[in-house]
Length: 393
Length: 92
Image (tube, rainbow over all chains, first blue to last red; front, top):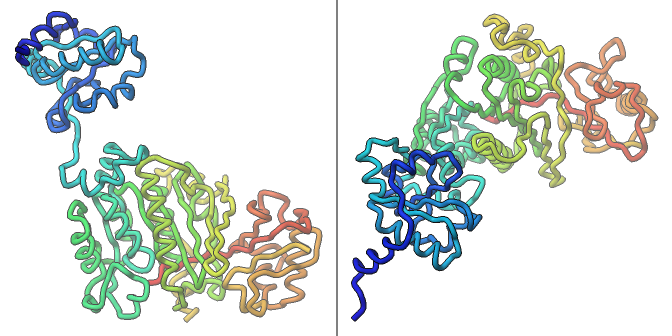
């Protein structure tokens, strides 16, 4: 008759090295690799600080990711010390590890002794499913998805650029989306502003956008600002956000935003569109140039067509808005090369994407100075720009 | 002859062309020959003092000519000049 499982376990424990939690605690940070072999749900309730997680069910296939050197000192633990003993036998007998110990009493005894426990942040089962394609990417993973969920992104406008940006940032799980827009949905918007729909004509764009976003992803908190961005409210609205997405349709607001974002040191992912062409750049204060380094003064009305109504190919703000969303996600994750110090130019008719370099201006009136030195009355200052623009109509 | 890329706002001044070839050995010569050929572009590119307007950026390939030698920057026949006025427009 074959021995019982309990008997086999006793035999295993009699021949594999076991280690007391007090000794494990003393060795933390001394080169030993501490591995938690419990299941994901158990790991999520708390683990030994600095431990790695390799569930026993994936031990053979994943152990090398955490302990590539078969001669290094490996300490395994589980809930009570049994599964880690089985796992230690596997490493020693089957996988050729030479220095493996199993912690007696598991995390239960560790906790009973009052030792520190690290509480990992985890995703719910629904989130793991929703973001599964992100979790499969090494550049995102659980840690990156947590960053996205923690991120606060402010969208200036829920129009042509803001619509696709908001949709994809919401889908990606960016946890907080602020939307500034005092406009209501018009039928002529629907050719490109895909976050709204025919039933919402006449509805505030922030309300319409919130409804679409919430239906798409309930993880996202939407903060609505049905106001026009101005010198009186910009600092208050921007403060607390990690990134601003700029889809502003006029120069005075662009300069005001630039000055406020430099002062608050918030990166701005900026895009502009006209006809069949779009531009994009990331203005990250003090890391790269600001908008005033690129364009120190606004153009006269005849070269500033944004003052009036212009045609735009409906799909173009989609293309540019999604390039913005991509830059936002890269900034949140800290991955890739953001378009800092570069102006990307997309030409839809030619199907080309080209770029020019943007340099920091050492004499820039705003970003050559310390943020604290920029006074309220200096922000967004331009010679009578509103009446200047009004003249273009 | 170098190639000049014309931005959307200047196209009405050059008969709708997106790219134009112009003669000249420097940025200044090329832009001035553009202004001679298409007089409507002159005030848009140059101030009354003959300097490039500050709201217009000009790039030789991908580099701002202001960090090169400005209007004196040498231009080869295979080079491209990009004229870039500021754009706004999120389309409300």
